[in-house]
Length: 239
Length: 176
Picture 1 (cartoon, each protein chain N blue to C red):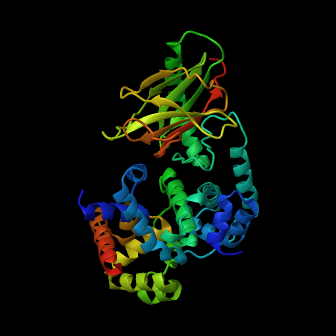
Picture 2: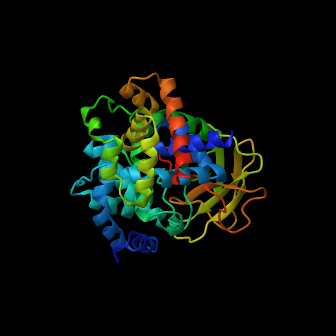
Picture 3: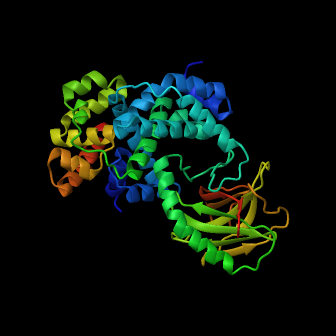
């Protein structure tokens, strides 16, 4: 892409004219493409005054209560699937599906997903209660199926997007109440991975995250790159 | 302490009262931004709720050196509303008569685009071809897709795509 192409794409992203798929692609690239991110930031600054053209309107009376409710709900250690909340200091890239439209889309997709999960689980011998979650991409598409049983955590990729050749995906777990995540290793290119962590045990409510990292993984004890996928382990009933 | 940047710093430290103060001063403006895009009070409320949750979570990422706090929050509200509009398939009809309320003529822009950055932007918008200017302003304010801008301006989709691209690049050059 030429410099003008990148700048025009960034301008159209900020303007809002891109279709959902194109916008999601740009949003996903922002974390790994500094030139594009700088171009988007410049366009946001250029066009920001246009926001003044929208007349102010009083929001519904109960909106503040809803904001507080949403913040409190995500701070609570709930066993909700795809909760997607993370400590404020931890970067997060997956938007939480708050709207009924997104949730409706999720509900429609979940039947096919459940079939996939069932097939995934059949290959495992029955053990103690299973935990599972589905990690969503930034465009809300199912990206990874995660299952935990008997102290082991297994991942399988679905709809996997290619990773840049100079980047790797690193798996992390954050038990409830912990202040720092634990690295569970780098994910292999074939998208299947099983690990039995020594220092932590999978439990309901544990956050599972995948970050984009330089070769060899994050140089520090936390993700150094963007968290691309996130989900919270929940008990799989009836499995 | 009513400075939005200072309030954001307090929000980043977990200060719920600072978030409430931001809500009190910004909610009507951000709801107006979302309403202009979604044209539905329930949907706009969902977008602004999402917006304030994101403001609470991302306040620590706001960098005063890189822009104004109110612009930063306005951007979060716009993206939240655009995401919802896309999730709904942008079913908002582009022939909605209320879309005509938004001023796109240079003299009308003079009245609403305040401040130094607003003055520069309106001067550069005034240099654009009128249809180009209208396409860019309507797309930004109402979250119209290329196809919706094309329908509204009664122009072929390909023409609108290339005009908006050309208009953006002209605008960038003028603002440099």
